[in-house]
Amino acid sequence: MSAMRLALYARVSTRDKDQNPETQLLPLREYAQNREGIVVHEYVDQASATDLNHRVAWHRLMDDARLHKIDGILVWRMDRAFRSVYHAAQTLEQLKYWGVGLKSYQEAWLDTTSPMGDTSPSPMPNWKEISSESASRPAWTGRNGKAKL
Image 1 (cartoon, rainbow, N blue to C red):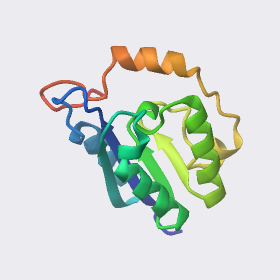
Image 2 (tube, helix red, strand yellow; image 1 turned 30 degrees about the horizontal axis):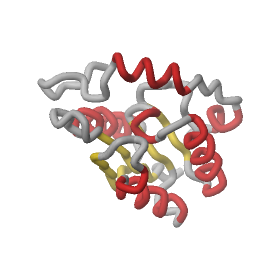
Image 3 (cartoon, rainbow, N blue to C red; image 1 turned 135 degrees about the horizontal axis):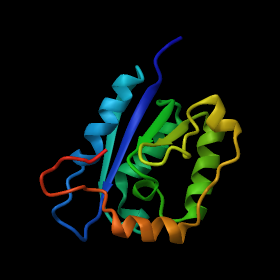
Image 4 (cartoon, rainbow, N blue to C red; image 1 turned 135 degrees about the vertical axis):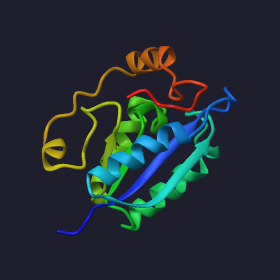
């Protein structure tokens, strides 16, 4: 069995200039390595989640998924990739059609990279709950640049 070709996606908001995408990417790299995946590319955006037009790396990632250049996508947290539950559902369906899985590092329930994750019904939480939880727990976990796992 060949190693899974993985893409890492990180997004930092334009509102807080102290955010560093490395705080998301470091644990994603380690996770991929521990799972014997091959990181073929890292995609990083500095844009608001709702500003999909300026998320150039996200568009390149979706193009690479469509072209079967990757087998799976690792994201730090759902709100780093998606702007709404609708956007998440739409994107996950498209990725499934292309044969590309997606896994959230922080949310164990969001994993379509395994047979179990692909067949189980997704307990997709309410986006308002995700947004309020995200507001109290920023993606960059501190100015010291270390992510708390």
